[in-house]
Amino acid sequence: MGGATGSKRVPRAVREQQMLDAGVRAFARSGYQNASMDDIAELAGVSKPLVYLYLNSKEELFTACIRREAAALVTAVRAAVERDAQLWSGLSGFFAHAAEHPEGWTLLHVQARTHGQPYAREVAAMRAEIVEFVTQLIGAAAREHARGAARARTLAGTEVSGLAHALVGAAESLADWAGDGRAGGHSAQEAAATLMNFAWAGLGNLLQGTGWSPDRVG
Image (cartoon, rainbow, N blue to C red; front, side, top):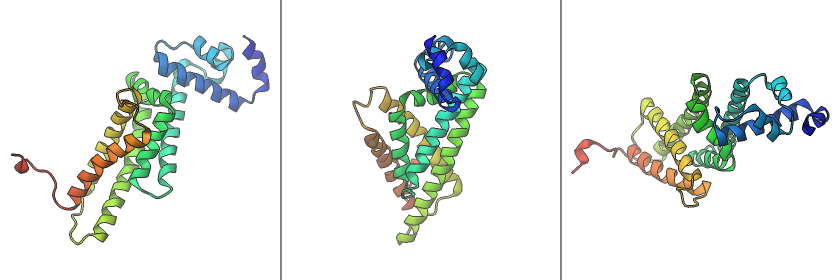
């Protein structure tokens, strides 16, 4: 293949990223089982032996793709929040990244979770990091509200953690909805606003001491 000769003039780090780009694309589109190393090599413009030389095996290539995409998503969320430490910023960063990197999102949320524990654990670690981050943001929002309210309820740590898990789960589901055409062309900002409105209304009621209970039904 012509790309194999040209590969000698490309720095290893650059060539490896090209292979990871090709791997993400192939795994997201075809699934782990159906994506072949021949296809990935062709997409990367290199020979199959060079892919094996750099990344050893299909399993290690898949793992490297997952780790790169997971790190990129976490970095995008953190960078968005660094601007003002607001929950809204974190959600906007999450949905923007998922929309801008649909194949990376498919790799993380669909492929990695359905091909065995080693890959699912990589995604679980990423998710735990995001949940912890969101937990901190919700806690900060609750403390800010308490300082400015005449009467405010303090949320228990388990409540904050539960809310963070629920919010991250909802964000993942909404990112799928926004990315597969069911959203009718909703933008990343609109998806973030949908979830923020839902979460903020509920959180506001909780902080005011008017949480839902079965006694309120009927």
